[in-house]
Amino acid sequence: MSLFDDDKLNSLPVVNNKDKKQSATADDRFELLAKLISTPEQHSSSATIFKKLETLIRKDFLKLCAGVGIPGESSLYQELLVTLGDLQELIEFPYLANKNILAVGGGFSAGKSRFLNSILGIDQLLPEGLLPTTAIPTYLISGETESIVALNTFNRSQELDRESLNSISHAFNMGEKSTISFYHILKLIQIQSPDLKWDNIALLDTPGYSKPHSEDDSSDRRGTDAGNTDEEKAREHLSQADHLIWVISVTDGTFQLPDIEFLQQKVKWERPLYILINKADEKTQSDVKNIFERIREDALNAGFNLAGISAYSSRNKKVFFGDDPKDWFDEINQKCKFTRWRGRFQAVFEKIIAFNAEEEERCRVLKSSLDPIYLKCDEVLSQAQVEKLKDTMKIISSDSKTHAEAAKQFVIFSEKVEKLLEELLAQIGVADETASAVGIEGRYVIAEGVLPKFKKCDVLQGTEDSLSKFRGCFISSETLDDQIRIRYSDIEKHYTDPAKSFGEKKKVTLTVYEIDRAENTIVFTVLPDTADK
Image (cartoon, rainbow, N blue to C red; front, top):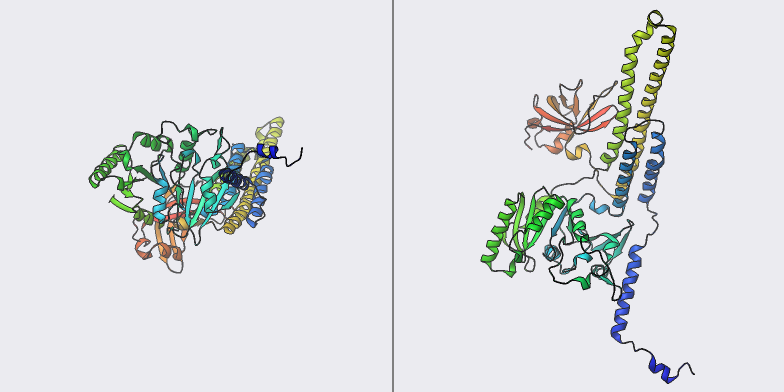
């Protein structure tokens, strides 16, 4: 029989244009899937610095700990590893680090994505009306040009276009028996847009925590763990937000109990809450007004502290009643946000350094108490007791030297980590918190001896002794032997009239910000009790 036998040809299946289109769409999605799960090797300068930092923590830290009995050593090491993991994710997405995270949450189909599209003035930048199992937390930030980047579960970022974004946002059909969502492959998506005018804000679009209101949605949810996945994902991201705007559809009519319970029991939201009643154009003015008042009363009765409340139409981009959410955004945008990477590393090292310093001091005190006996031991002790006392004194001296050396080495180690961290943060353009960033920095330095036994965030009261443009401001406290000094230029950055707030004999509050044992210095943040900025 010929290869081109007519009967054989007639028996072949016919492939129509629709089948070809579906096949092409499937191929495109498989190609996108392969792209998203790829883990290209990192060769950037920031990756190189991170590798050095990782080696310090994973190898050198454990070597330093060997031979010194540090309480909770294992948990401290795990804390460092968690911080390293978070830092690695920061390298891929540094743009969010100094942003005030303003999350937009709500139930399924409340109109969260449509609200954000209306704020940006762009139709369908964020896909709307998706099944909850397909939604991925998405961050919107300002930028000179539009760009879309996805972060996969391997902490690797991939650039996308709008077409890819739409593909990700819909279920990936694998035949009739299963559905795969990109949800399990991606941690988050970041969209940079020149239409977002708030430089210090990242708007977070979260999955609807509730299921769609449908009698049977199983056909679109096969092959997924749709039950609680989106609720848990929404809870996780909302809990980490700095601010929250909760979207309620006007058709709900009230602030429903499941919403209240989710916010209070799952998210545990205790900060001010902004409520946006969406789709206000779907009701009459009088109905919207009544619903607005009812939801506000529901929120207050539930114990929420309201940052604002609006009856809003995303379709018309209009506030019907209440506050304008853009005014709230403007207020948040004025706040600078700093990261706390130095603080996270230092918190671990300070515990170890403080432990060794305390042990050294304990040995010194013990030795001092035994010295008088040792000097007269031949007169009051037997030969056997003398030998035992000598052995004890040697052990105390040895332990004292061991702890002193350990404290010194951990100070040096801490400085190495801090230097690499500063290089890394500078490389990726992230501003970490310093004392001067959160307030006025005052420094307490002693030339010799042991620093007072303070810990971070301890609060003292002080009095201003003098103020001069040339010498700065000097503050004394009953708890300290010497004065704290503030540079005059630092005061000028925060106060228009330094003499009015930092005049002689004025009272101030001192908060321990950092303890630098290498320089024998304690850094305080200083706040006048009555300040006229």
